[in-house]
Image 1: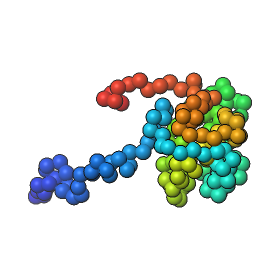
Image 2: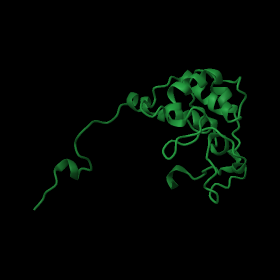
Image 3: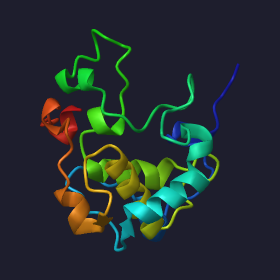
Image 4: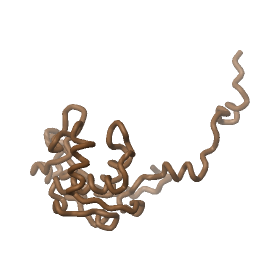
Length: 173
């Protein structure tokens, strides 16, 4: 018959090593809705437009219109979205301007997942700039805006009140 190796019986495969605190810290870069984890830096909507054209437009379109079916629209405040009726009308685009709940998590997503082929390659300043550009293009902030951690935390997204906070304790999730 088959006898599993001792390491497997102990609950692991016996390969690799425990991550160090420094390794964990390097990967622990997520930013929550409150934005307390935001890094130092700043960026303007104007500079963000240049970065967007160079790093984002190939997938999301020159005007943030998206490239169906893979790359979603980022820019657009469709009035039908103001009622948050996305479930009954799937034709309403879910853009940053009418669907995203927190500006801080927009920064987080851009920082960790974009650009598609080189995720995490934008500096903090570049990420603030692209975030500012997208928020300005969605008429959430003025196009003359410069964002840093404090300014980004102060942004109120149009759809913010449409979401219900997850108030479960971490042990019940």
